[in-house]
Length: 83
Image (tube, rainbow, N blue to C red; front, side):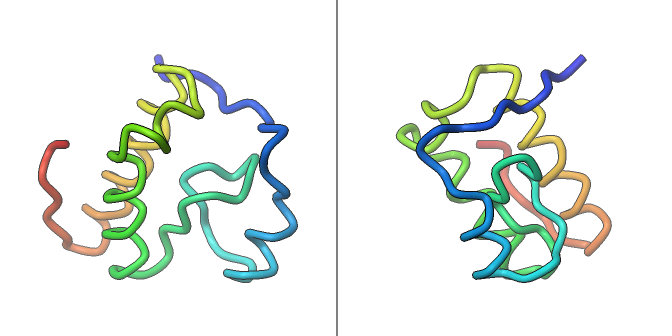
């Protein structure tokens, strides 16, 4: 099972909510990786697959985030490449 995402000290969740609004995030704890539109889903997938972004999370947390993005992509009929 995927891991629960922990609060990051280097992130202000209010900033993400202020920037994107009340949307669904792949990381809802830290308000990172919005997945409410096709463009944002593609961007979230791209960003979480950058080594420096993924390194801020545990392996299980990255898996959780990726799974949420994949489900959002499927829901919106978007094809994303596996890493």
